[in-house]
Image 1 (cartoon, helix red, strand yellow):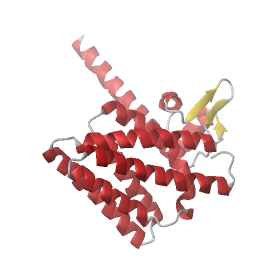
Image 2: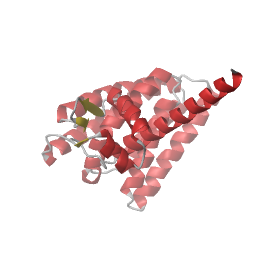
Image 3: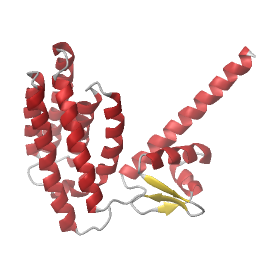
Length: 234
């Protein structure tokens, strides 16, 4: 019985690992528009394009439907959910509130814990500056993503972290569509440094204000650019 139980655990572990791999691979493909918004295909087609077997891809699709990135259409396959401008506006409303809360929580952490986070945030911001100096906009975007992920991941609220990942995955396409149209990307790094300073000082109220102002500024730049592009869905 013990041997059967061990085999069952091993089989379950391998299956879980394959599903996790399929989930990560498909989400990455959606974020990078390998499967663009509005794409519709069968689970088998998606599995073949990912180079994976159908069963883990099926389970990954179920998880991604819960994240709001895909929709399973009975007898018609899988749809990559497109976003309208109003969807992006709502997503930013959520991101603004969540990051403001995360910054407030970070600034209230004990100094020794706070210092480690401040160092990681500063490293991500420095990477943004370095990428921008090389005119590497994709590198800049990756470093910017890392800053905002760290802000929420290190705040100490697990539920906030899980919900945040879902909405940032949904907002990613809008950010990448407008990346090369935005003015003065260096302003983002300046705003990051102001936020880092408030967290380092252990000032929750200022940290919340800085985080909120930074994301509002990004929203107010990105939404008009999306309107200017004229895309009904993205």
